[in-house]
Image (cartoon, rainbow, N blue to C red):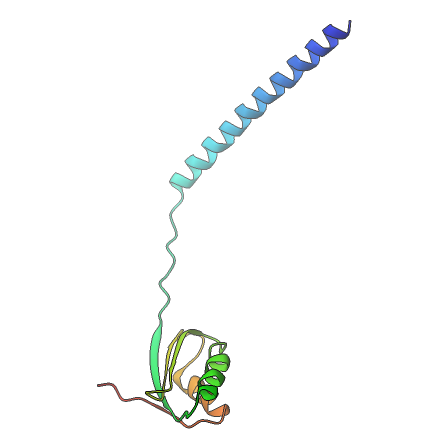
Length: 119
């Protein structure tokens, strides 16, 4: 009697596993068909601008202060600070910030900043 119950349970488990696999395959096919017909959305390329400021820094502490504060300004994507050239080179998202806002942030740290003329 125990063998019959075990065989019956094994048959039930096997049939449910097969049914689950079939349901999974149907769901996969549905998703593939749906995704093929759906229009593909392309991510819009975000515009990034670059500005270089002349900043009157005189030591490594000045560089560190600018790096630690300006890097976290809203919209800043990349930041390079050069003590040798006295410049702060910023890549930023113009939808989130502007040159004027970045200049004000540098000046709020106690430094004079002006936009470097293009060569």
